[in-house]
Amino acid sequence: MKKSHQYLSAFVAFAFGCLLAWLSSREPTVREVLPVPGRLEGSAVDALELELGKAAPGGLLPLVEGVGKDADEGARSSGAILLEQAYRSSGDELVRAAVLVSLERLGGPYSCAALASIFRLGNEDASQAATRLSRIDDQDCAPQLKAIIEKEERGGELARSALRALGKTRSRAAAEFCGELCAAGYEPAVRREAAEALGRIAEKSSVTTLLELLGDQDERLRRAAITALGLIRSEESARGLRSHGEKSGLGPVEARLVEEALGRLEGREPARLK
Image (cartoon, rainbow, N blue to C red; front, side, top):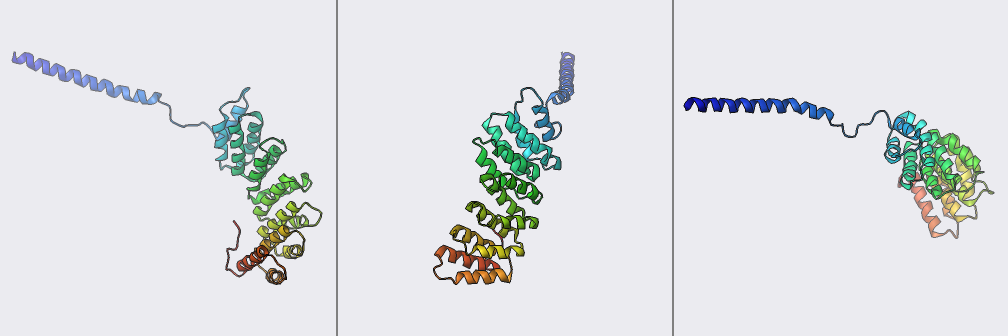
């Protein structure tokens, strides 16, 4: 009886050991067949290009968003071109909105051209495309932005947005061009954007043009010129602002702007606008 009990215990121990060995041998197999979460082959640009090459592209949203987060230099060129293609091939509002966001994030001349092209489609996204364009602040974009303004015959919403972006590039080479757009004959909104751009570029050669604008009949243009002068550190700017501030009949808003502009020049206010 005692022996039988020993045999039974040995058998149970042996069986339990076999079970553990079997389970251990199965675990790696289970892990091997599980997919790696979130794993993508190639770059986001490659994935988007592959999808757009299909007869009926689908699942574009995550791919479009992925391209917008790609910091690679190639994404700023080929990626921007593919994003415009995705916009044109999709009727999904979410995809189209994501394209505009991604183009702004990428920046660069190709994104500027793509946003301008989307604006010219004249659909419900035109204003949003112009707004996204106005937020790009890449210095490399200056020539492309000037080309957009010229193509728009130096007027209209897209030209104004491109001017706003041109100022943010702070490209000194663009100062003369913006100065030309301050001249009488251009639409008031374009002249104001050009004046503000001169302030952001902060080229001392622009002071003369801005001082001339202080005598313009358009009060909003005068305000833009005052603010711009406060961003260009020079004695000529300070003298011109003080002289303008002493004029009789100056409105309270203009007077306050003159004080703020002088404060920037004298270090009492932030030197740059946000």
